[in-house]
Length: 132
Image 1: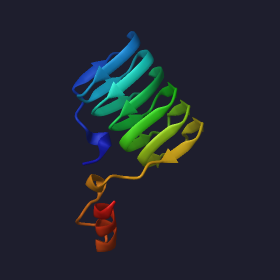
Image 2: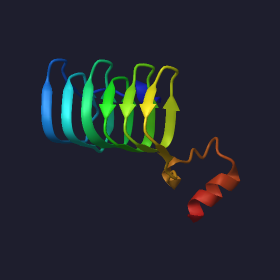
Image 3: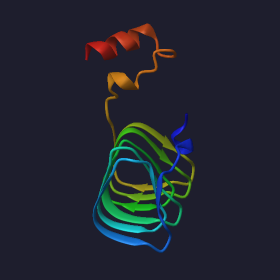
Image 4: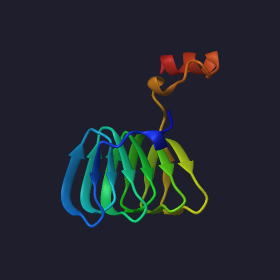
């Protein structure tokens, strides 16, 4: 299943403003404004029109809005055509659509053995991942 098809549990609605440390573990969509720090153990979707000024840590994430701050995603990060990012990115998997605006650096993290798809990966890749 694609991260773009993840079921959203909670939405921070358009017109909403939150400032401070934001921690959650379920799938969330941000349509409003957030300033501070975001720590997500699950999936985060920043919608087109949303404005986030925060350092973000998440398991997986899709960005279609504006983000100012550093982003660390342990699994997959998907940048939609309307995404505007000013900050550094660290992730193990990255997809960037045409039209994305990115000012910052990108660092690809080493995927964990759990990230290996045993049905499509060559045997050598699986063996190497298990040894590390």
